Every structure is written in C-alpha cells, then in structure tokens.
Length: 116
Image (cartoon, rainbow, N blue to C red; front, side):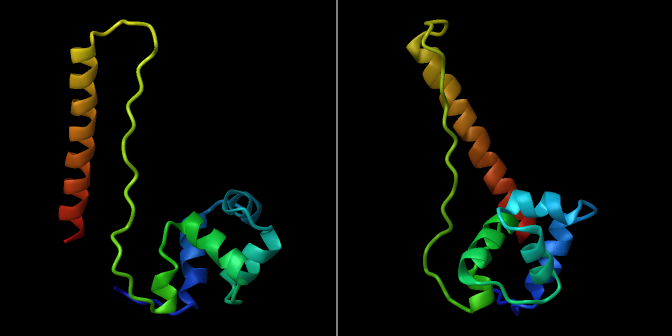
C-alpha cells in the first residue's frame, strides 16, 4: 500500500476543492470552514475531523497512518428495484437485474485495467 505523509492531506483537500470556496467544500465534508482551511494549510486535524475529511476525499485513512490492511475495500453493490406495479414479468425483471449487475462488473474491470 502506498503511504503518504500527513502533510499531503492539505494538498489533497486543495485538489478536491478546486475553485470552489472553502465554505462550500467544508459543508460538503461536514466540517467547519475554519477547520478545513487550517487542515488545508498544513495543520493536523483531530481524529474525528480526519475521518470526515478522508471520507470526503474518498481516501483510506490508512494511507496516512502507514497501516497495512489485509481487507479488500468494500465495494458498493448495485441494487436493482422495480416498482410494485407488475409491468415486467419476473423473468424480465431478473434479466434486467442481471444486465445491470453485469454492467457494474464490466465498469469495475475497466477501472481496474486503467489503474494498472
């Protein structure tokens, strides 16, 4: 696993924030604008703030902590819902669900190839 120094957290925040204002980004991350600004400028956040920012950035906190994990990252499964109205036969609904799940697997495979 790649390890990043905690100082890179500010760089990642700035990159994710882009041209948006600090208040907008902070609200999205679930922290105060003053806190997000301090962390972006190199201050080390408390643990709860660190967790919120990592979640907002979409990064595993372990990359900053140098922790090796043996767990596979949890994947968000596609969920298929159809309305209660019986517009589709059960066979058609099953086929559509399988098609959606196959598309999700194909997307994951394509992303995995791009990361290699």
